Length: 274
Image 1 (cartoon, rainbow, N blue to C red):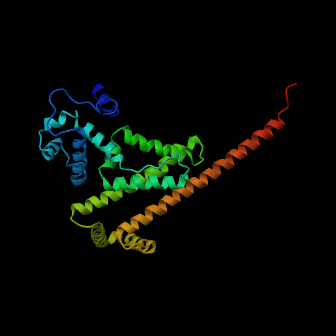
Image 2 (image 1 turned 90 degrees about the vertical axis):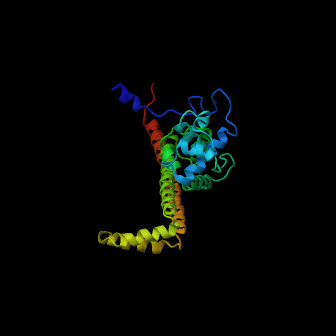
């Protein structure tokens, strides 16, 4: 039971254990530093995916022994967490204090996060594995919170609003990134892969009705390429979410006004104490 309980504990973090900038004692391996190791890790993850990544493969790419890599990081997980935070720095974050409309800043953050997930398909898996408390992760999370706070929604609605927008972006970017990865693995463009998938599904009689409906929807939404269709769908869905936030701001304001009016009415009807 004790062993099972230990296994269920939350994963720790390289940022909590003081290992993010720590190096082991002894001589420094020639030509290595943590930045180079992290950059090479990201390149290998982009090229081969998370499943094929190993410390041995990384050491071979760096032309060093695996022990040389461990001079800079204690574990593979530590290195993956460092790589995850490093790519988060690629996002261009708006300044919540600039006076720019919150709608434009939500759009900017959503687009940046989506493209990060598409460029680095392995990120979507690691986001759900680690605590995400590296400096670049925290900068993104803090900016999102400050921008969403400016919508005018009450504090009790902020986490729900952030979830609605950025869990949508996470799902959309994850699927889009996986689609690109599968196409690349098959030596095809995304359009070629998509067409091959449609042709395969066409051969399944049980999918005929759904496929016909899908074809009609795709024809109606427009777009000559898969990328254009994905872009159009993402932007429209994002606008739906922003419109929903606006509607909820009005609803919350109306509810607050009604509560205030009821409170004043009750105060007038309550007899004063002599």
